[in-house]
Image (tube, chains in turn red, yellow):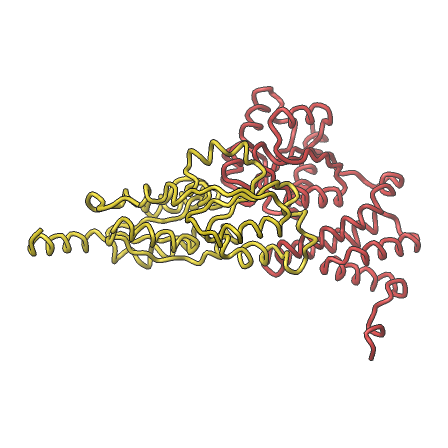
Length: 234
Length: 216
């Protein structure tokens, strides 16, 4: 059998098989195949939001589980994320047009003195995939950047990231500033980064420590639901 | 010194043996410092340097090693800095009643903790290598990051970096050349700073049972 005979023609697959194939392609970090799959579903009349959740987010959820379990490592996750980005780039403008459900808004950034953004970028992408509007402040953010963005964007969630033991204490500087201004409780504060842990998160007064992007999304959804419940009850 | 003094000295030395539980990435340097200082009371055991790829595992591995060896040594010193454990290694060492190296990581104590702190702003976008990491660049940087298989990931990892700073423990032209090549492979500017062993001899000298015979 020639190699060509083994090739899968995505457009010939029925919907359910194409979804599974896209999960596989995401797992393997195949950006072009993901873009092709997204376009095929759009041609078949699928809602952008359905493509995003059923094909892309679910595929990345599987990647996230295998990363947590030590089956996949950072390079593979980055390739998968790059593939998902390809699909998201097609869907993003369409999601806005078709009025996909919005979960909330998040401002996120790596703290001052730290230029590491791999984890933060994954969180941003997964949060967008989960229906959050994400304002990404990038790297090396002094407290003023966070304050300015919180004021202008009025988000529900503030996310802070740090990879270095030397920079993670800066998260407390930001939270203390929020406390001093009397606006700490206006935001859900999520923190993450390799050297962080639950205990540190509690000690600086954050709402939750998120060990990876999937946990960040789940935690954000849960805390937003709680916030809405409190508002409804109030 | 007569024979009796030597024997007494030996006895004291045996009683006051200190075990160093160190990161494998520091073995060569520790042995060099030990030899220069004539610090025979120091014994060395190492944990795999690969643990740095999974810093969250370091505290548990250090604990295992401390428990395994503590019966045979009067004192144990952990030659790890925080190394990305977010304070958990210090917490573990406190719990076990053993001391460890100060500072965030080996780049910092090789550079000297104060010097490293001073440089932190101007070298915000610096990626550091030590002698060990230059020698082991492929197995500790290039391959674990998947750059051998997926060079397109370079920007995801190093897009925010501007230069590679080689903190040199030794004067070795071949390592300098290799470090320069590493910078080229990562598309980063190159700088070399000779640090020697930095603060490491100072940490180890505190473990001397009696005044050190030499100073590295």
